[in-house]
Image 1 (cartoon, rainbow, N blue to C red):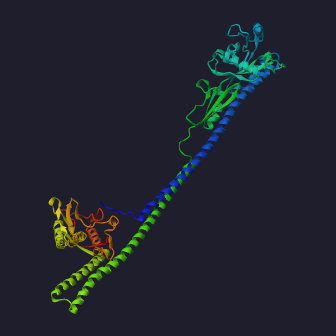
Image 2: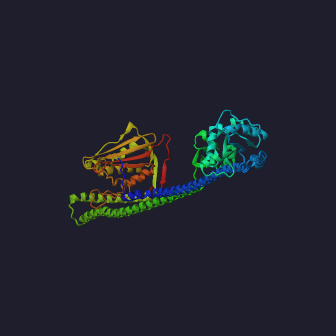
Image 3: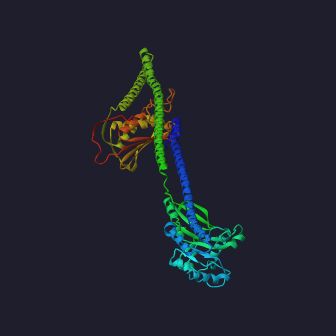
Length: 592
């Protein structure tokens, strides 16, 4: 498996990475609060405007009805002022009112006297003498009659009402009783007026009592004894309240007026009731009846108010901007912290490298100086001189290898590495490099298995043979170096149409999870102390990584931990049948 390490810097960065999101959340919350506040304020203003408009329309309805009552009062005063009914004066009075123009919806004003049954014939005879051809209808005996005597302005429908006994209709009788007993205007419900006026209409009848002049009307009995008849008015609600409907429409209101209840049968007039977000119902006392004025506001657009939209846009934009700035700041801080940590680690690695370098150079140098001094002094027996020279040569070669590695690393870092690429057989080149290391492996007691190629094929790559051999040699020798006696090292090759993979697997000391991410770093060693059990400067794997990169490949390291062995996988691009590069030197840049 592949390991990663969580350093304190990374943990701290993960904690701080939530700061931009917290800023974004806070900005969003403040923007939402502002939008909600503005929307609530706009809603409160709209609700206040709705209440004011509704109240204005209700007052207009009351004023329009009061105007009809006032006209009817004037007619009743005219009748009550004279002991004798003056037909000419009444008609002139109604004509002067100009009802169709000044009082639209008031279709006529009439008078119905109170006639006892015993005086009905005398009443009909007197009316005939005054030029009124009166036939009381409907026929039939009743205790008291209220026949229509006057009805103006003269029209076919109004003229047909003369002689109709209003008391014959129970609903009109109830309205008249209410007006008589209360000495106030009383109104019927919405009536079908065909029996009364001859034309099919739905109208209201408004009644006002007329008492004998000078008669006391303080008590109920006094009012009943003093009653001489009723002045009544025909009211068409659609026409009468047209002005109220227009006023409501100008305020974007829908108005409906009901008689006592909001059922469909009780509706007097309506401008339509569209789907509403606001609705109010107010009771208005009209002629002894409670009318319900229902006002509803047109359904508002689901969109936010303009000011709230602007706040939402500006707040959202500002929140996103702050989020972007904070995220950039956190990233910059994280990058700076990582760079600082890397610089610190580099400085530490440099110090450790210098300590290791001095130790690695001094150890063979001390050995050479020691044996040379002994050879010069003659302290070495003749049969041991060859052995002494071998030791001096081996330590000199060790120093030369250290210097070569340092120069190699320097050339790579400075971009002065020159590759002599040519088509190369991977299996053959790998076998040659592995076989060169068998003596060292056998000497240490490590089994170095032969190269195994999947499917038995030998893929070709475009590579520098010397540098490729260096890659294999460093990896295999590294496996032998860190594998104790009795262990083993395997080298396998796999190829697909695009890449070639070289696997170097050992059963050695393994790599700890903490060190695995840094295994290819320059001058980094799991044990960098001068008392470590394995020599070296920690440059071998770094050189391998850089050489693999220079060949347009990559290398990966895997380990399950200490004493679990290690696996290195080199992946290089496979050479096509036509060849993908020309032979010859290639100067490559640094991949540091």
